[in-house]
Length: 139
Image 1 (cartoon, rainbow, N blue to C red):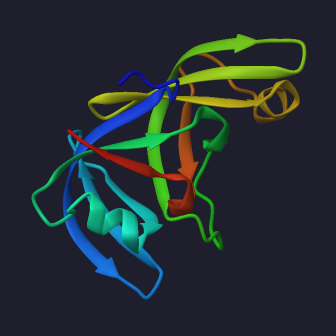
Image 2 (cartoon, rainbow, N blue to C red):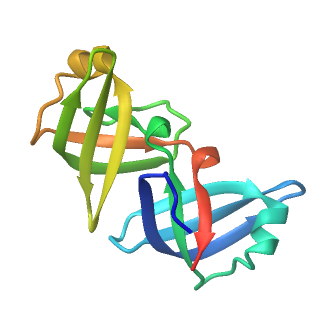
């Protein structure tokens, strides 16, 4: 299956915490970073997720926010530091490619946000991803 989701990060499940409706799935990405996905309990069972399972974390580029520094008082737990390797500014939107440990992410943000943040190729950023915006796929 081919997907239009640009951000497909390989990793390994380290823990599954089931709730009544949702499950929190902890993942160690191949680059060493940690990611949390909040998926339905039914999906976690259908995927047979358990520690050691190989997965791909899937995140739409429109669900990746960027920060130019550490942010306190924020509920977003997935924070991946990286360096901008590509920046395409359109009339309204910007596509930002970010190199993270052993991988790459793309963020689609407004041109205004990219300008306000002073983004440029080579600048350091932190990719912020809500756990509810991370989907999982098994091999």
